[in-house]
Amino acid sequence: MIELAEPLNLCLLVGDLEKAREFYGEQLGLPLWREEPAEALHFGAGTFLLTVQVASAGELPARGSRLVFAVTTNLDALCGELGRKGIVFEEPLADRPHGRSAMFRDPDGREIWVCRPSETETQFHRWRQSHRSRERRIPVQRRAQVRRHERAPRSRRARHPSE
Image (cartoon, rainbow, N blue to C red; front, side):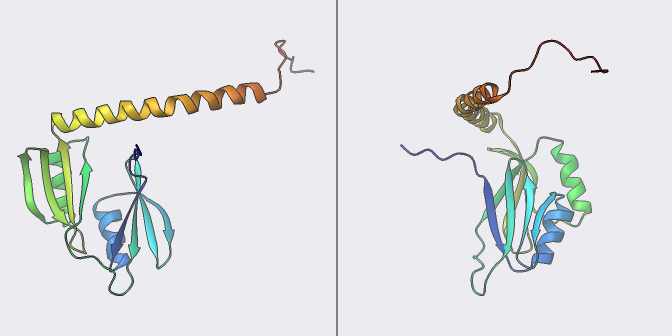
């Protein structure tokens, strides 16, 4: 069975790169990691890279995509701050089955949700995190052992500064 890991990069096609820079960088506050002038912007978004790339003619998808950001800080304060930065919420902050959340749209019409996941959702993510750390543990230990054997032996006797 093939098992996919967590997302590494999410690429969104956009119509206007400068509007995307203002929206994702300034309004949402995602840190810009790298820029490919006139082509793409790469933002840090938690554990993955969010890339916004200029779409070719006719390549921009129809509305229907959703992007959900988990929020670990005060969600009410975050929504208030986003509102002050000009974000208009189509779905106001409310308790929903998946958790407390609110929805607004990016300049290309995509749904952007900010969410404090419910306990059920959080349990899934904790389970996934523990599963992922078990998968990574063995290769990390092997790498550390190899490095230890590759090191040149050091003398236990401390050198005096005058030597």
